[in-house]
Image 1 (cartoon, rainbow, N blue to C red):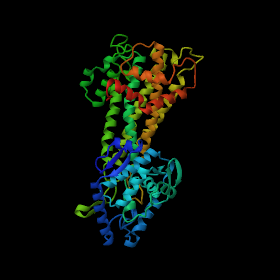
Image 2: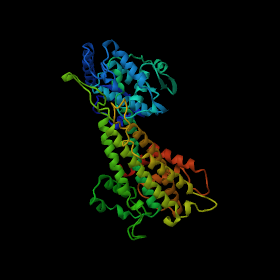
Image 3: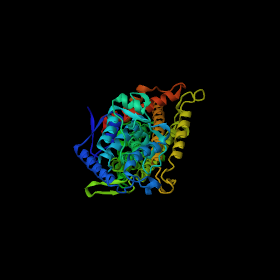
Image 4: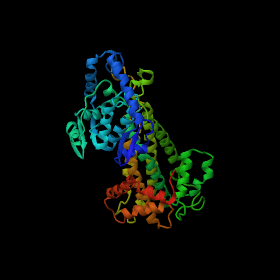
Length: 508
């Protein structure tokens, strides 16, 4: 059976995908087990000696100055989960929930949280047996971590809340019983250890960034098809141009476009048809490349976050010290996901502008709206409307969440990240961009057919073939959303990128 092994330090984004989407199981390393046990022993000693330690023998937030007795320590943790289960809105997708549980388990496996090994193993058992808590998508400030949504995750461990098990929505108690998992009673520090972290925002972000890599490659393929549809000038992608402004994304995009278009008989050279193209064609490397550089930045930050201890307080058992800090604060992720939102939105913006060039006869020298019997037929007219609507919506969604902050807990927690909102928005923008690219690709293939298809490029010929195996040239008006959905499904499946990369090598 395929497995992901957790040691708290070496989890990858691909591991997250494998657990979230491919149902890999999860195990702890022996070293992680040892660290978790040592950390727990120190917590027990502090409780037994009634040492005043935040979140262990005190209340939370503004109540941090309220000392909790040894006898009340367990009830404190249960009360924490029940009172903090305040999430609202639609439930998170099951793949996100699986990623959330994985990331929380990996953070706990680092051995700085003071959780019992048995409790951590129950969380991992839920992942392995497919018990997926119902976690509402809204209600997190992104600091102190994702308190509300993570509390909904923990409810099911206690036999409360709700969960999906084998496609059925059940009470937490019934879901755990059906899966053969015993519920637990929390003890000192455990409730806080389970919910005080950034795992919801980071789970959403990790899935989104993985899909963003595919979208950035798909954007290059879509641009290549449009280049052929409009007899675009490939001279602008010459390596000499980009070597004197050597941003990685820019250089890689120029290489991608030349590889995708290699051997094409539908592109042109500088001065052959016209001296230069409009920016949306000529500046593809600069525009797409900037988004790719942003994606690379976010990947770096996510790789750090998924292997970090993000709760509070942290237990340093080797020096027998407990430190109350702020690793739960989601600002590093919040800024990253706002940046990702902007980067993705720009891929959509330029795609919609290329689509406009395809449908506008004044810009394309093609039949208006890419249909031969215009007037009787509207062709791709409203396809461009829909794309324009989506990119306009993305501009609203791209407003940064991280610049907003509302104080909470009676001003004890007086600056929060809103990073979970940022992650959710980035994911929504990604979906909109995928749809816009589908529209551009359909328009480009239609334009290629209308222009009279000659030999296409090494990459575009494969993309065109896959699209035309699933969609037809538009001769008379037909229901267009069905065609758009087919193309979007192909993009989502990663089939086009995978087949193009088989032929020409990995896109950058």
